[in-house]
Length: 175
Image (tube, rainbow, N blue to C red; front, side, top):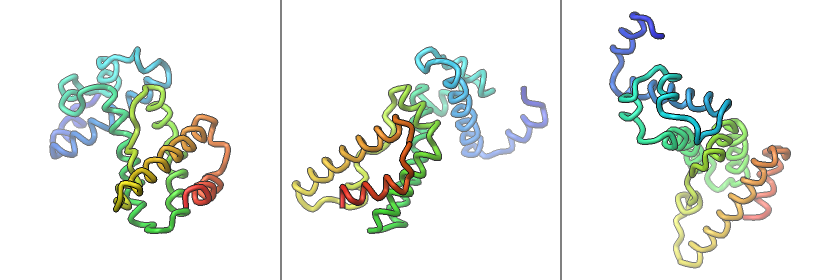
């Protein structure tokens, strides 16, 4: 339970900051619950109780428990999107950053997979390098499908290969 002092400190926060903290509490609560029970058996009431927030606060920030996971994954994918800009045409560095980031956030993605939640954009190539022709567009789709298949297998098989190895393979396969 929050003390009166904690409640007063929270009430001094801006709405945006209070919502950010609420979202973070909801994300942590859901991840903790998913560590002990299946996603489909977790209720909104359990999440809010464990997060220490009201149902109103929950619905002010999310429409469903799936959105909590989507939000957690989205922040990671925004980092990856930014890495496109940092690395430019250095694909090895981008792939390396990608695999390391997934490895560092493996719990978030594990729970997303368990909940059957869509976990990110499927058009990284199109975002970074807009296709000039339909042929280029279809080539992007094929590369992305292959990349996500490789990523999914690497992830579900326990990430046995080092991110450096995966980056080298992706450069070899796709560039």
